[in-house]
Amino acid sequence: MNVVNHDFNPPAHLRSTLITGYLMDPAFPNARDICGEGVLNDGTTVRFRVRLEDNGEPGGRDKFGLRGSNGFDLTTRELGPPGPKSGGGNIQLHKPNPSTTGPSPAPTEAQMCGDLTTP
Image (cartoon, rainbow, N blue to C red; front, side):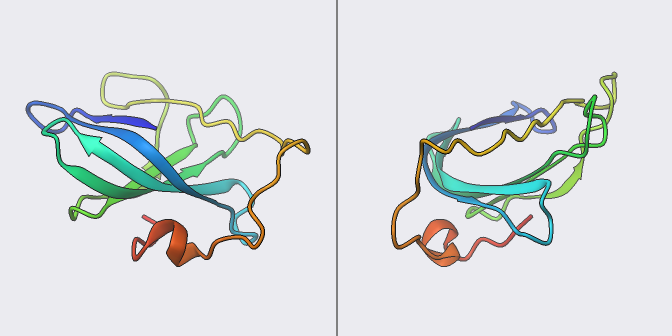
């Protein structure tokens, strides 16, 4: 995962170094949470949790949110259509790959994401 926030000067950059969790909530079948660890452009290591929502094509209604262990909180919001005031984007969830299996027993949400809740 690679996120650049242009609201900061210089832009804040988070580059993941370890993915610790991939979660699906049956109540929100078009959403996924990804948890992990990453490095900010200032060298700080943080834990993060990202919320991704695929709300159809072409993607303007898709949503993205990010919460970090450093207190950063970007509430899940629509990406919007491409334009000068919107980042735009298109999240696409792929069908499960039957050739891969997760660990058994599966880790708990707390083991994957610590105390970071869905943004």
